[in-house]
Structures are given as structure tokens and as C-alpha cells.
Length: 249
Image 1 (tube, rainbow, N blue to C red):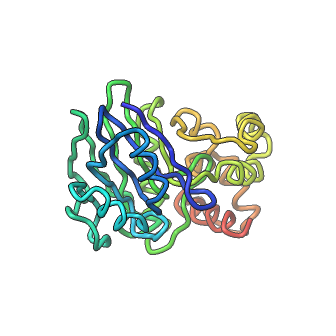
Image 2 (image 1 turned 120 degrees about the vertical axis):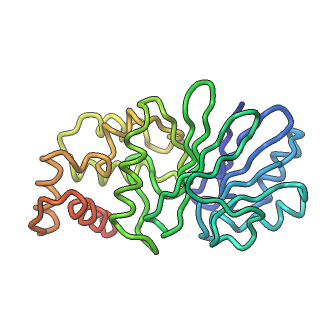
């Protein structure tokens, strides 16, 4: 099993999961680079997994289906081009490995995550829910939903690998340092992230550098209250205020 990123647009990653002569594509915002890679490596595209309906995650579906008509597209009800609608509890299979579909609303109200069980651990294709050192904006979901989705991911094993759909790490780390200026893990990660690919990322590292997974820490809550002006001890409200701070950072 090989997992390969294909850069797209200014900061997207289209993830390809390869097994023998077949491949799965996750969130193809465009098709040309994917088709070129598959042809170069003599791979057949058997499945497409869609996390949510935004065009930078779905724009390449039609062309990929034209190039690989036997391919099956999986997505939620918001994906009109999906061949099979999936939601929480659905199970897929690729290369003899189980893939769990998780409902992870927040960025959108119907966002999905795909949790691949492989011999070396879990590989999570999380779309725009979790980024390295950050999380997605709230569009058609709610901050409470996004918080709950991130908490669910946070409870996975330390060695779990996450494959976000965007390379936002350096910008996210600058905000993380603004929230936790004394966090040495963040400073080290920021030095490592300058102008180089940083994904995938493991959960143990995220627990140390991602402020949106650290809202239970008193010093972060105090910092958010100071910066935002809110007067709350509620962790979800702290999370929502920090997400709003990030929107304007």
C-alpha cells in the first residue's frame, strides 16, 4: 500500500492510495494531474472518496469518471455525482483493508472522514476538518459540531496518520504560536514547516502543536479569553472564539 499526494491549485492535496494495479482517489478537485499520474504508473482508478461538496474537492470527478468509467464514487447526499451515498457507519474495502466512514460535521454540515485500517495503523483522510496545527472554517456546520468531530479524532491512537486536503501548516503554526507563545513544540514545528510539505501528520504531534485540540488546557482558555474578550469557561465557546480569532488572524 502506497499513499501519494498530488498537489492541486495553490494548496490542495489530492491523495492517491495505491495497491498493486489499483488506486483510490480522495477529493479530486481537478483531474488532469491525477490522470497523468495514474497513466504514468499504469494504475486503474477503482474508487473515489469525497469528504464534502466544495468544488476544490469535487471538480475533477466528471473527468475521472470519463477516463475510468468503472470507478465508483462514494460521497454523502450533497454529492450529486456520487454513485453510492455513504454516511456514519458505512464500511468500504480497498486492497483487503477496511475503511470506516465517519460523519465529521462542522466545516460543512455533512462532512465525512475516511478511516483506513492498515497493518501499520490507522490512516485518516479528514478533508477540511483537521489540518496540521489547525482546523477548517465553519461554513454550513456549527462550531459545536466541528469541536465534537475534532474530539473524536483526538481520541484515536497516537500513531494515527492524518491526511488533510490542504497544506496550511506554516500559517496555522503562526497562529498557534500567537495562542501559545511559550510552546516549544510549536516553535520547533514552525522551523521545520518553512516551505516544505508537512503531511501526513501523526496525532501525537498534533496533540502538542494544534491549539484546536488543546482547548482543555487552562493557559489556552485564558489566552483566548484575553484575545477575544469573551467571559466563558465553556470549552466549546473557547473553541468557537479561537476559530473566530483564526478567521481574522
